[in-house]
Structure formats: C-alpha cells, structure tokens
Length: 313
Image 1: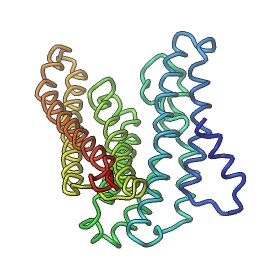
Image 2: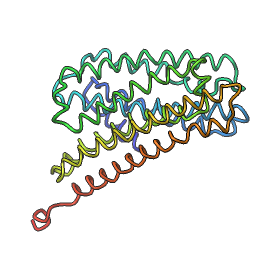
Image 3: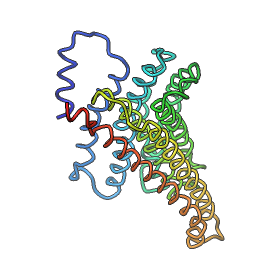
Image 4: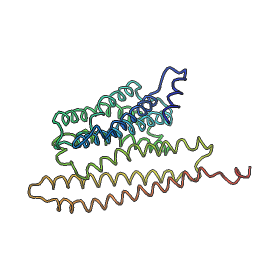
C-alpha cells in the first residue's frame, strides 16, 4: 500500500532522471514482497529446506530491504547537509548494481558445516566475498564526500548520525565477508559473534541512519525547531557508545567462545562461563541504547507539542 502511490507518482513524473536514492528505494519496495512471499510459502519447504529458506529470507531482509532504504537516506542527506554532491555518481550506481548482483545468496554462510548442498555453501562464500566490491565502492563515495567537508560534523548532529551509520555499514559488511570464509566461520559459527555482527549492521547502520533522517525531517514537517538541541547531541553519543560497547563486547566474547568450542579439551560449559563478563558488557551497551531511545522519545514529543503562544494564536 506504501509502494502503490509511490510508483504511481514516479510513473506520472515528467522527470526522466532518477537520483540514486530513488534507485535504492524503488528496488527495496520491489524486493521485499518477493522475499516475503517466497519465504512464507511453507508448502514449498520442509526439513533442511526450511533452514535454507530461513537464512535466505533473514539475510535478504537485511540486505535487500533494510540496507537499500538506509543507503538511500545516506545518499540523500549526505550531499544535502554538506552542500556538495557526492564524490562520484557513477560509483553510486556501480554500488547499487553490485548489491543487487551479490547479496541475494549470502545467507547460506550461516549454515556452513550443516547438512546443505556443498555447491550452495560455496556459492554463498563466493557471493559474500564478492559483496566487498559494492561495499568498498559505497564506502569510497560516503567517506570521501565526508572527508572533504569534515568540519560540518561539528555543526550538524544529523550528519553525525549519518556518518556513524555509513561507517557501521562499511565495518559490518566487510566483517560479513570475512566471517563467511570457512576458516574464520569455523570459529565464529553459533557464537555471540554473530549477534554482535547483526546488531552492528542493523542498529549501528540502519537505526542510526533512521535517527538522523527523523531529526532532519521533523523540523521541516512541523515548521519549528527542537526545543532542546543539546539533547539531540546527547542522544547521538549515548546511542553511539551503546552500540559500540554492545558490538565490541559481544564480538570479543563470541570469539573466545568459538575458540573454546573448537578446543578438543574444552567444554560447552566452559564456553558459557567465558562469555559471562561479556554478556554483562552487552547489558551495559543495551541500557545505553535504551536510554538513547528515551531521549529521542522526549525530543520527538517536545517538537510535536506546540508552544503556548501557538495554541493561543
């Protein structure tokens, strides 16, 4: 229902050129229904096929639904805020088609070592490593554009959210390519490392970008500025430190957990004990993230409530 009016607007538009943000948004709105219908066609899947369908859907929801929307916002807001076009428009399209080409089959690297066809696991490894190409392409565009106008970061809280999200996208995506390799996957498989990686991608990238997008759009929609702009800055730092503590803590704990599970003289019980301090660190990061959400709720409510003078008027 969201897609229909958007597609009709595009159809009726007389503008022949579509900016890369539109490419990502249109693709996401086409890809998601396809993913959802196929993954939820239960009569097509049974046994191991269900696990394959699950990871195919779970990874593609991140890469072909959430990621295009996040990248679309970055490509729109980054040049908008710094006041200059992105470093290379050609690279942005190259990154888009690279995502479309490589991402659809990366999910099976979570099932390496399981009872899946060998060719499927190998295909996933190749596609996962190949994802480094569009990721590096997008990273060049984002980070070069920001580096040339780094001083704007001091002035714009929205840009801080956007740049943090762009950096998280780069790190988490290259991390995904790395842990698809069998030697690395053998250690991180079925550990908290995977949870750390997932949160860095979904929260560190997409959620932080959406925070910035909301803070950019709201004042323009309601026609007034935030009452307490310093709380926007506080929200950024609390959320940023929260996800960094969360991801780093669980990443280290997951690596040690995997090393213990791989140890022929180790035990599952010991692997659980090893992770306990890092689960405490995760809780600290999670509480900071929760606190940042409370700050944002207050910011949003405060700007939506009109001033007394406006009510009287």
